[in-house]
Image (tube, rainbow, N blue to C red):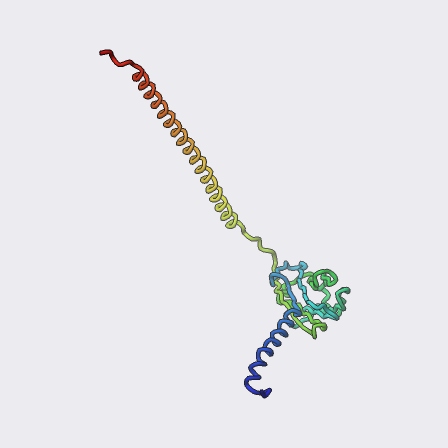
Length: 225
């Protein structure tokens, strides 16, 4: 059979597909991942300090990893490098108001930063970008959005408290109703049991009296002729 024949190509197709799938699974298993947590929004009070979280994961480790924080995708505010897992990051460049507060020698590869003395102009998009040369320069990033407010708005929980109170009251009434129902059913059952006992006792007494009367009647001798 010729190598380029249709039959040969049909036989080679499954093997090629399996190889491609294997490469895809391999790439996923060793993929670099960057995360800013469960939520990608954070709110800060004007003139306060705010934490911008970021962590990364890699299955094969890292070597000379580079991470960068950007403001609105263009302004570099922090640039660092990590030699390996046993060393902490070294600063290459950073904004004077930005402070590194993470650590990469512990369990989590934490590359979070703190933005000090937040201003209204600091509101916007912050991107945490990571590049790992050990994974053939694999790159990944995650974004968090900062909102700066004059004062924190207190959440009005009145409606929530009312709903919780009503629901709790209804549950309490339902439990009370079930308890009363069980007590009433218990009392009714006891009364029925007593009534049955009285009927049985009364029936027994009647039978005894009838039996005694019959016995006396049978003991009388028949009159002599």
